[in-house]
Length: 358
Image (tube, rainbow, N blue to C red; front, side, top):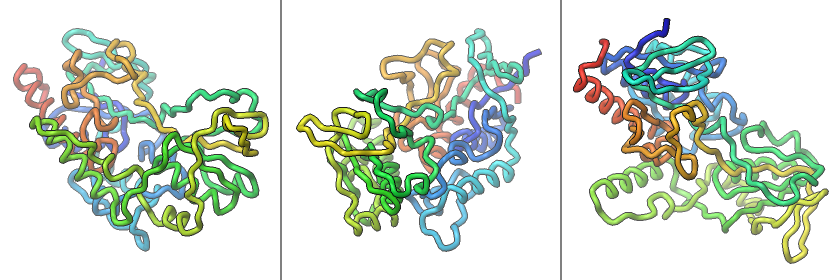
């Protein structure tokens, strides 16, 4: 027999945990289903040297600030995973893992959440699976001919595997800059971007970015003139490793190449660079395959929402996928603030319908 919950949260990473915190405070009956073997969400899969671009005290989940990491202003991946693990334990959140959700179906009174460990019936589903499981690699001419190694940020684990090689790093964001910074210490690197990279001022980090994104969101809600928000400031935060790369003179970006060849990359003017590896730091897409059975996705793979609630399915909320599901909601602090609003909306909606099991 299917298990019934007020809310089923799909995903046990930072957004799912933030939702769990507020669901417990709201007194709702809920469960978190996580496909991973252990806690930490996407952070458990990232490369070891990655750094947050905000200090620990500015990267909290609700209720418990992230402790500072000794000797590090910007926390490492291991520190974040440890924090998320302890957070889950601290609030005794009901996480079931590993549980892989295979589909969500509209059953009328409930949404049926089908998994490899049985079925849950949910009055409301919060999808908080993030983007890590859906890396985006553009299709460029010559990929089939290239004899070197092609990999995405999602499978990057550190610079040593590239020692002494020639490496092309593709992308104009924070991941590209941080990976370029460390690979360039052991390899000959070429950085290519679709447009000239834009660096934030030296004194800007995630604290400022979240405040700017929040002000933009509020301005749009109130009907005030919109701005480019965070985009006004630039794209790349100058964390210490990137500052060091700038001092070494390796933050020189070339325009995007036109084609891969057997032994490297080439541009339309005939310029060529030999390479043994190309690292695609080209971002991710929302991991929404488990929702395909609801038929809600539109152009670009996005599910239209009002806040976090799916417009065409009021029993579904989407949390933590980026600005379209809340300002800076894919960050630690942003996930918490967005989760608070989402759970408040859910509690009011269920109460108005007299559906809560609590």
